[in-house]
Amino acid sequence: MAVAFTSNELQLEVPSRFHVEWLEDKFGPVLSASSEAILGRSIKITVTCAAAGSSASTSSVDLTTLTAEDTAREDIPAPTSDSSTAPLLNDRYTFERFVVGADNQLAAAAARAVADRPAKTYNPLFLYGGVGLGKTHLMHAIGHHMGSEIL
Image (cartoon, rainbow, N blue to C red; front, side, top):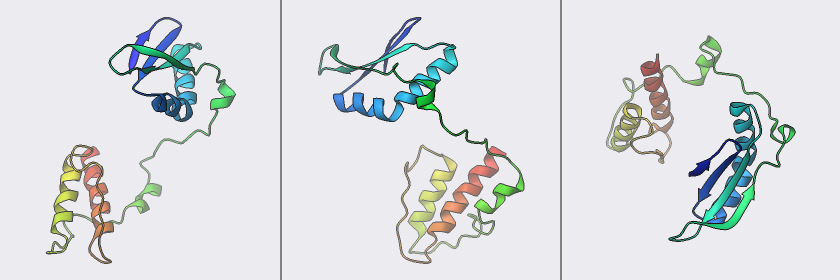
């Protein structure tokens, strides 16, 4: 959580030392590069560990020692709407073509709920079952349903 932001420093506070280390390891380069890209200059990013029931403790990590070379990564191309992405979803696997039976009706209802309210209902959705019960079919159907609403 952001605690303070000044012209040359961003202070973040997290609940534990574990979170400080995790944030540094996983997002340190991203935070540093993103802040420099957005602001056009490097700023000091300080992550502090909040003590239980009090303000921030003295445990902090300075993420500004990272350079652009440290954070360099391969550019990921933006998704396109051409036919090259069409093979990702099987056109036959839609909700309309899914046969609901006693063994898969709960999974079908959960998949419908996820498709209707993505990231709200059953998040995450795990499907487990035997061969031929429709796990792949339902995943493709969710993708088709969400894709049709976006377009």
